[in-house]
Amino acid sequence: MAQMLVGGTALELDDNCILVPIQAIQAFHDSQDHRIDCRPPLDGSRFECGVFDVPLDWANPSLGSGQIYYTRLPASAGVPRKGTIFVDPGEVGIYGISTGGDSWDWLQRRGDGLHDGTDGEYDIVVWDARGLGSNNLTIPGPVQCFNSAEEKSDFYSQTSKDMGIDTLLNENLAFLRQQQPEDAERWLAVQSKMVEYCLQKQDTTTLRYVGTVATVRDLVAMADAFDGPGSPIIFWGMAYGARIGSYLIQMFPDRVGRILLDAPQALTEDHVQSAFEVWRKDVAHANDTLTHFVKECSKPSKGSADKCSLGNSEAPELAKPFNSFRIMLTFAQMTYLGWRNAADVDLHHPLLNRAFNSFEPMVFYNETLSVEDTIVGLNRFLQYHVSIDLGIMPIVCGDVLPDHDVDTSSRAHHDVVQNLRDDIRNSRSLIMTASAFPPLRSLCHLWPVRATERLFSDPQRTVKAAHSPLIVQYMADPLARRLPMTVVLPGIPNAHTVVQMPYAIHHYIPHSCVGQVISKYLWKGKLPKRWCFENRPGIPMNTEDDLAVPAGGTMKTWAAAPILSSWRKFTGEDGSDVDWVPRIQVGLVLLGNIIMVALYRVVQKLRYSRGAVRLAGEDALVTERK
Image (cartoon, rainbow, N blue to C red):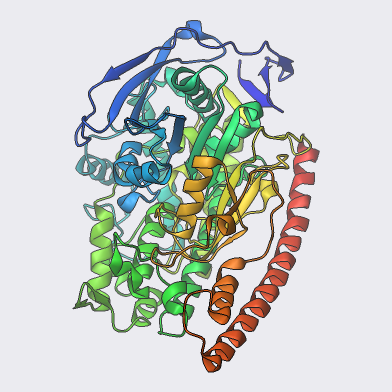
């Protein structure tokens, strides 16, 4: 029988699809923590590694056991340890940005910054959730299909040939010509064969125990073991990792210590839309963000250095808008594209050429690049990030509420093909390619396995978390849409939001505005003001009192950062000499800042109101479908 959580209560589905309450799931008393040597390249003198026993099925531990591989950066010696900060960085990539990789890689790159930002008082723990991990130490582990990128390429070539499909792929699985509308159906057929092939290579009996609900239960068990039974849980989740935090708040609101959702996905969208429809929204957002970036940042202008820079002390070259665009483009491709072109094809793509030609000169580490250099370099980078497993497809698609059936899958397949054909024919696609095809995690109709436990978030249910969760959103991040609270954390009235204002890709820079917000919240539970205007270190924050208010306090909605900066210059609080001519100039800037922020907030409220009306209709649809 499948199990579903409705309003935090575990239910079973009997053969007649009637919801039957079951008893509360008991703790897994046999959980044990086994320390093991950390795998290279982790430094065993700095990090601690282990495997943690869990049941395959939390509702029925007698069915067998699994294990979770974790990595810990311990609290500082000589400092009173206050607990554990659990971190799920989503799909980790280069620079520690969520785009594909291992959780320990994020800890190795970013852990020291968080450790210092919390005064070394907490252990920092990451883990390979069920269905993930390259070390094959988590059980159930990832669905691994191939041993190498070459083997994957051979499979696609042979499968296409067997099906009579001329996909014109090179050895790096890139198209040798621009895709046509009919390619959507052909490529989807090949992807379907690939999923079937992967399932044939697996012991599929454990796949039904892979899912976000089970991962949350694993997290709660680790918190009990590391910090004591019933201890408040401190958790930071990014992108897909934020999904775990959302589930945690819905399932265990009384265990919420400090839960931070960084660039979260829409929890309620999963209940009213397919993963493919959500992907189309994400693609449209990425396209719009990148297009606006080119328009606003390709030519130097007043204020563009701050607004258009992803730069930081670790990657100073990103301070240049051209390189900021390159990195946003790269990670948008890695995140959203299920196919890509060979370099020769993209070189003839007019939108891509126009975008890069807008940035002149194109300089990277004192080397002036041509458009051809840039596109070829981008293509070469992407070819080294070919996944040989199914990524998070088994997890995300395992969480889908309706059970898989052939008729529904066939209809979904037809709809996906038709929409992709229309998109290619009408050129409604990313600025980075002439067409877009979804990654596997957005093709859940191809995945037949559903998790034994799945979460349904009742839109009518209201639960106050034990402590206020914090949601970090980004006004102009191509990898993360800014979403209303009603879809991110429905029914949680004491959740709080902070928004990063300039262009950004969500990743942790300790001394940036968002970096300080994250550290101070995880460390002491301080809730920030509503907006973050700085994206780079070197621009000092306001005082701690300006940055945060105590959890549960009344939040001002005043966007204070640029206004306070102008005020201090105007009054001389910044230590400068009093000279009334520049004082008058600064006063005018101050007045302009106040007017601009006021106008901006009016526009945002209007946009939010329209969004709320639309989402109210979606909520009504959810209720009707129930």
